[in-house]
Length: 417
Image (tube, rainbow, N blue to C red; front, top):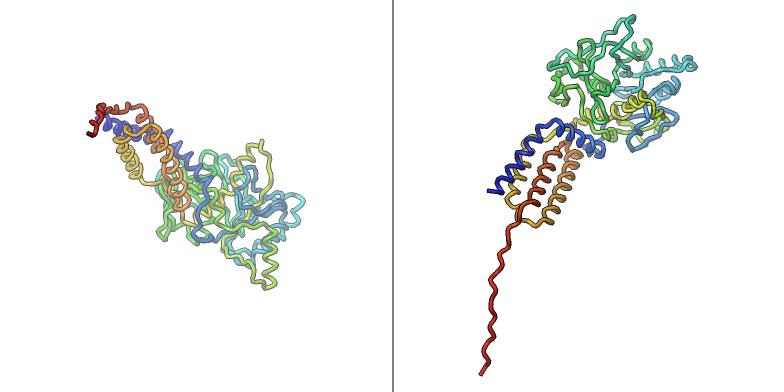
C-alpha cells in the first residue's frame, strides 16, 4: 500500500507541475539552451549562401559575436556594385540584402553605378523597417498582405508605417522585406515570420525571402495564426500565436558562407573557365557586419538580426522545424516513474542516488540527440522533477529490517574409536 501511495504522489506531482505556467517557461528556457548548443544534422546542402560584405568581414564557422550588427552606411555603393557584378554570372534565383541600404553623403556620386548593376538582378529583395509611430505628414504606403488568414491577430506585432527604407529608385526595381525584430516576440531562437500592418497580415523578411525563392505567390498561402502557415504543396510551417518560428541559431551553418574577397576570387576563376569551386546556391543573402558599442541598447537590439534571419531562412528551406513531442510521451514517463516506486524503497540508498544521476544524464543526452537529428523537443522540468521527487521519497522511506538467522550450536564430533 505504501508503494502504491508513493507512485500516486509522483504521478499527481508531475501532472500538477505540467499545468504550471512557470514550468512551461522553464521548459522554453531549456529548449533555448538546447538549440544554442546544438548543431543541426545536415541531410543535404541547402541552396543558401551568406556573403559578408565589408572590409572587416571574415568567414567563420562560429556563431556571430553578440555585438556585431548589419548596416550598410559604412559600405560604399561601389562595393555593392562589385558584389552584384561578381554574382550575376551565377544567375541566382533571388538576392536578399539584409541591412537597410543607406549611403554616406560622400558616396552619393557612386549611386548610379550601383543602380546599373542592381537592375541586372532578376529578383532583388531589399530590407526595410516598420514602425508603430510613423510621421503623420507622410501618407502610409500600401503593402500587400496575405488574403487567406484565420485566427486571433492580437499577439502579432503591429505597425502602421515604414521607418526606414531604400530610396525610390531602388524600390522600383526590388521588393521590400521587413527585418524588424521586436523585443517582446523575438530572440536568438524565435524569429517573427508575420507582422500586422494596418489591419493586414504581411510577411517578414525571412518568410518573404523563402516565398520568393520557392516561387509561391502570397495568394496561395493559408495562414492559421497560432498553428501553421500552409503552403500549396501541403507543407506546413509551424508558428506561435505571435507569428514567430522557433529556429536553431546554428541552422545557418547548413548553407555556405563567403566574404566578398572570396566571392570575387571565385568569379575570377570562373571567368578563366576554371572547374574549381562553383556556387550551387540560388538564394544569396548579403549582409554587412561591423563592430558596435555594447553599451548602446539600440545597437545591441539590432545585433540580434545578424545570423537569426539567415538561420530562419535555412530552417524554412530545410523543412526541418522544431516540434514538441506528443503529450503521450509525458504520460508514459510519469507512469514509468510511478511504477518504479514499487522497487525504489527496497534499493540501497547509494544505488538510488547513482540511478537518479544516470537517468538524468541519459535523459539530457536523449534531448540533445532528438533536437539535433530530428528537431524533436522533449520537456525536462516535469520528468526530471518527478524523478528526483521519487528519489527523495525513496531515500527517506524506512528500509525493511533484515531478519537475523537463529544461531546454530556447533557440536564437536565424537572421537573415532
